[in-house]
Amino acid sequence: MSHQTQLIDALCALGFTTYEARTYTGLLENYSQTAYGLSKVTGVPQPKVYEVLRKLEARGAAVLVSTDPQKFAATPPQEILTSLRVEFESRMNSADHAVTVAVSENKPLTQAPKVMTELSGKATIMAAASQLLAEATDKVYLSAWVPELSELEPQINRASNNGVFFVTLGFGQGQVHEPNGHFYRHGSTLKTLYHHHQNRHFALVADGNTVLWATYVDDVGWTGLLARDRRVVGLVRTYIRHDIYVQKIYARFGPELMETFGAGLELLTNVNQDLVMTDASIDSVAIDAAVSHSLAAKILRNEDAS
Image 1 (cartoon, rainbow, N blue to C red):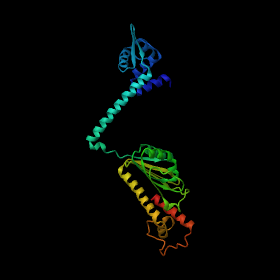
Image 2 (cartoon, rainbow, N blue to C red):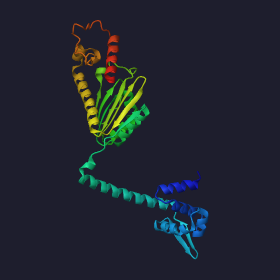
Image 3 (tube, one colour):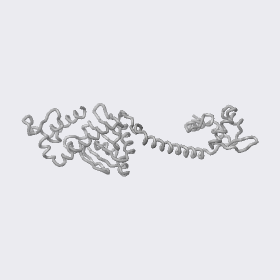
């Protein structure tokens, strides 16, 4: 594609007609042209050239530089672009005002459409999370494993520095920068789950109106859902909050809970039965650390899949 064709396409994208774009391009390349001369170099029909030149004059893109014979020159491109930018911003401001008035007077317009988007692949999911963090202005709920939190650390810090309040629940071991707000470590799984257990999840709720939920499952990889539906937002936010409730309880009564439900509270995660370590069916002495870890990982993987 020639530079001339690229310029014509760019001008058309900015609102010029094809004839206007071709004529303006011809003026740029051939200063002080008559209408007849422009018709020859641009291919715009001569009867149309005069009409097009008048339109270009009206929008400030062409200037009459002599009258006998009539010759025209192109306004410098930067002046045209500046004028178009000012005009566009003015139209945007007018549209923004009109939308604000319409929304305030018409309640149905305030109801956002229910939109859900499927996501696949970690790069796509992290990009969506980065975008939500960049757009957040008030409060973010975040539940994720340390590797994902570390990957998003620059975006989290930027949002935190801009005043966004974070409620964060971190899974796994490793250092994590704690942003503005409250950070909770998922302590009840530290003794049973390690990085090689790959059934992970990622949950983010931004400003109470958008949610990103994703999971990693062996042989499938990362898949997720981006939703702007308050029902889904409420569901995931409640999930995170209830998980935090458990961790706050565990932080204060961990020894008693482990004595009752085992290391990592593995028996607590079994919703098919209501078992505790003192049940006759449980021989706590016979359950060594390796078996306990394996059981907990298996139960939690089943929980994630259910």
